Image (cartoon, rainbow, N blue to C red; front, top):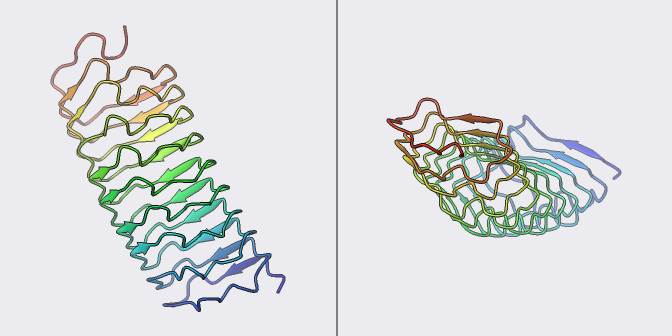
Length: 239
């Protein structure tokens, strides 16, 4: 078959044959949105190295296993939002060297381990809003040197690990609003030299250490509204 786009969205699919897409060597886009898929076989996307867009949003997925997408070296966009994903195995997205966007919004993730986003040198945007994330491993974003935007809105984060954003020198937008953060520690954002937008509104922040915003030399918008701040020390916004 010479199919370039395959749209199977808005059906009632509960399972797919292990080798269903084997003959679609030239396919560029597969849409599986709005079905009832709960699992993905590791062999399902084998050999689809020309696939650039994959939409599996609005299904019933709970687990993203290691090497599920291993052959998709041309994939640029993957949509997994509005599922029931609670676990992503380390290495689940490994080898997706062309990937630019991962959308994992509105799932039930509670934590993300080291290695979940390993091997993604061209990733520009991660969407993690509207999950139940309480903790992030301090190296979960390690080596994502081209990352430009992270969305963590509407989670349950209580603390930002000291090294969480280390090395993200191209990050431009960071959204942390509607979490449960109680304080901001010194040098939390120190490597984010290109950050322009930082939203931390609607948290529970009572204390901001003096050098919490050190390094944010290009910051244009800082939103700290709707927190629990009682006092701010001289120098917290620079000398």
